[in-house]
Each structure stands twice: as C-alpha cells, then as structure tokens.
Image 1 (cartoon, rainbow, N blue to C red):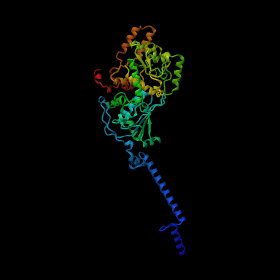
Image 2: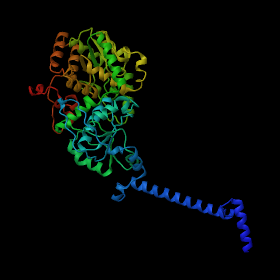
Image 3: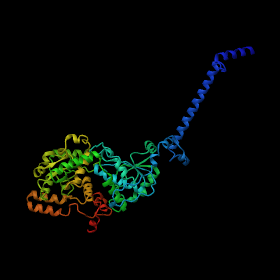
Image 4: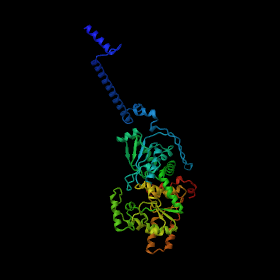
Length: 512
C-alpha cells in the first residue's frame, strides 16, 4: 500500500508539473459541486433578505416599526450616489411675480403629504379649480401633483395638463409658495398602485377651515389624498387675504398656455389688429349648451327634439324636463344669434366692427347666423383667419381651441358674453385685473323683455335702443364690489369674475 501511494504521488507530480500537486478528478468534482451549492445558497439568501427588506421599507410608514424608516434600501442607496431623493428636494429661492399682489414669503416648509386632483368640466372651469387647489395645497403644506384634466366630459378632449399649460412655468413660478411635482415619488406611487390612498369629492363652496379641519387629517393619515371633483370647492368670500392673492397669482401669472398656443393666439390678434378694432362675441350657442339648458328659442321642432334626446343621453345632466319659454323669460337662456344682433345694433356698435366669434360650432349653422352676419358683415372666427395647417394640431382638442379664444378675448377692444358661463366669468375677471377693459355684461332678463316688446311692435326702435343703452351703462366691467350673500354662495358674485382683492389700483374700490 505505501508503495502504491508513492507511485500515485509520483504520477501526480509528473502530470501536474514541477511543484504542483493535482487532486484526483473525482475529488475535484466533488469540491466544485460543494462550492457551487454554497454560492447558490448564499446568493438566494441574499436576494430573499434584500427583497424582504425593500418590502418592509415600502410599507414601513404605516405597518412597520418606526425604526424601519431610518434603514437604507436599494433605492435610497442608489439615489444617494446620484442625487437627493425627489420628495426631499430643497426648495430654490422664490420667484417674484410682482409687488402689486404682495406675495408672502415661504417659511419653513413641512410636507404633510401629497394631494392629487382630477379637474372636471371645460377649460375655464378647470382653470379656476387649479387655482383653488394650489391655494389649498399651500395652506395645508402639502405637495400638489400636477392636476389631471377632465377627459370624460361632453367635449371628450384627451389633452393633458402639459398639452394646454406651460407645466414647467407653472411649477417654477410657484416654487416659493407651494411644492408641485409632475408625478408622485416612486414610493408614494407604489402606495397608490396597491390602493393605499383616499379619494373623495370635497364639499362645494367651503372656506379654508374645512380643508384645515377635515381634509388635512385625511392627508396625514393616508399620506396621499385624491380629490376627484374640484369645481367651485373654495368659497368666494371670507378667506384670508393671502389665499385670495395666491388664487390671483396662479390665474394671472402661473397658468400660462403652452408656447404653441400663445404664439398662435398672438398670430390671430395680429391679423385682427391689421383691420382695426375688434369685438369678441362669446356666442354660447353650441349644441351642448342648448341641450343642457333646455333653451330652444328659434329652433325647429326637429332640432328641439334632438336637443331633448341629447339631454336625456347624459345622466349627469340632472334636469331633464325643462320649460324653454319660462326659462328664457327668467333670463336663464343664452341669447340667440338673432337676439344678440339686435342688442349690438341697439348699443350702436359700428357696423364695420370686426366681430370675432369665440365659440364652437353654432347650432343651426348659417341659418341661425344670418341675422348677425347681415347686421355685421365682418364676422370672423379663428377657422376663417388661419390656414387649416395652423389648426391641424388643435383639431379635436376643444380645450386647446378654447385657449386660443381665451387669448383673443383678453386682448379684444370689447368683450361681450351672451351667457354667464365659466369662460365668460373668468375672462371678465381677467380683463378687470388687466385694467377694467370694456366688458359688456348683458342683463338677459331685461333684454328678453325688451326684444319681445320690440318684435311685437309695442316698442319702437329708438326707444328700444335707448333702454338697452341705459340698462347697460353701468355694466361695462368697471370697478365694483363683489356681492356677498351669506349662506348662499352660488348666488354671490363669483370670485374669478371680480377678484377685487387683486386690483392693481385699490383706490378704485375705495372710491365706491
């Protein structure tokens, strides 16, 4: 046996070379197998441990012990090498937007959670809601996620926030006031994906104490709160001055349209200016408006039936049975093209004046527009002033088209809305802020009575014109105090139609 061992050793030395002893192949294979199993076991254990740790960290805020909040994870370790975590970003110096609105300085910012909002309605309804939500987020010290716009309304516009508004300007111009992110940080997004958030509609016309006492605790509890209806959710009156001024700063400084929309708006204004002064007529006589309001004055029987069918087709339009005659007499219907033609003539608007129609497709088409175009031959629209290629990217995007009309309305010599909807109110307020540019606020109830008397022959033209002018002498968008009606916020003057706290010349109000 010893001799065999020596022989084997000698053979091993020869095979392995000088100074190298090679183990038998069977022993080597076993050793390699054990090493492989050990490596696999270690790798598997490591992966499992890290997976458990990451999961515990993700839910640590709610379920895990407090100590987990201080532990590092794969994500935080990786971000530590590339930069700060997004949700702990240091706010840069504030961006001044003008001293006339007395911006407050931002103190120590403590993030109480995240606020997601889904706006509802048309462009200007959403615009006002965004202003409200920024003010609420600032007051509650919560991080606002860039609002989601309505895509399910009658207009079916798929536009995102960044398709209509300059999102970068929106975020940076408010950086000294409120923290706004394009989207939730990854960890918060995981919570939302698994349903760890709260969603609700806030109560309409609430003052800021409602949000402090009832909404803030929900945000602190759930970390992420989603407000799924945001129209008219903040009161008109009785709010702190800094809240009112912030609403104005958002509306008039931070909510800029995209560069493409702004440039096209300037192009339309340049074309109009070449031909002299122009009046913007917000002729709210589209099919959806008539179906919703139930107003059928001047419509054929077939058209009235079509509008009724449309009203019943939309379940969220709650009023179904409507007496058009009574509603019109009470002044709750938009003026028809025929009625507004009489009013403009009675106000002695020059026949050569350009009349820019800020509206969608007029229901009834050329037949309903005949009276207006006969009285005012220079009736134009963006579609007639621009080339089809200019509007190619805006087609089927009603909010973007409305944004163009908004810009032109602001710059017009005269603005005349035929119905006090959201666009009429927001443009009215913006023109007040710009220096009380002439806005004729029609008293529809009186106008309907005068029009009917004139058409029946009981009121001569001269008397009709005189009465129309006298009724509207003090309804031209001049300085006025907002009407306050306690416990009836819907009947008050709308904040965005008359933002008196933000006037550039407060002496105008003091004189009233």
